[in-house]
Amino acid sequence: MNEKNNDAVEKMVKAYETMLERVNKVSDRASPVLGNAIDHARETAVELGELTREEADKIATYIERDVKDAASFIVETGQDFKDWFRFDVQLVETKLFDMFASVADQTSVELKKFAEMARRAPSRTGEITGPGTLECTRCGEQLHFKKAGHIPPCPKCRETEFKRVS
Image 1 (tube, rainbow, N blue to C red):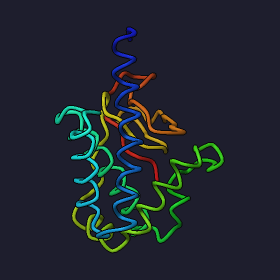
Image 2: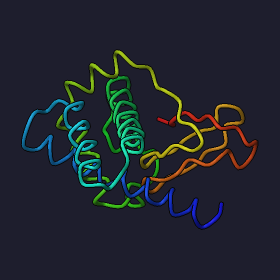
Image 3: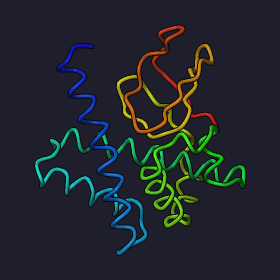
Image 4: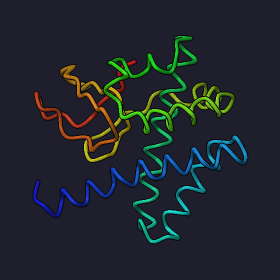
């Protein structure tokens, strides 16, 4: 990947973290509805000129996907949110984990609805994902994300579709 592509990916990773922080702030002080909080974060990013409409839409979709996946895990297993990461929580950047956990906790009723309505959507190469482990749908190779990051092709078989390991 060249320097220009690296800068673009880094911009999207930073935008994921910034929008997640905004979702957390909106859900703290206003409606606990996740969709409204994500919409607010998306609009703020566009209004401030941080992202184009297309970029903000992509990041909002990634955040919603990851929060839904966490909700599905919590509902289906009855386990703790921390178990969703499936690796040492010490490795996750504390601020990002706290924001993500806060969003998941504050929207538990809506998360249950999302979990019932949506089955785990695959994550694909080129998208941004939150912290956790993704598994290649072809060969089972696992990618571990300690923080938000760009999803590369599978290093083992070059597949581009992954499922979150929970």
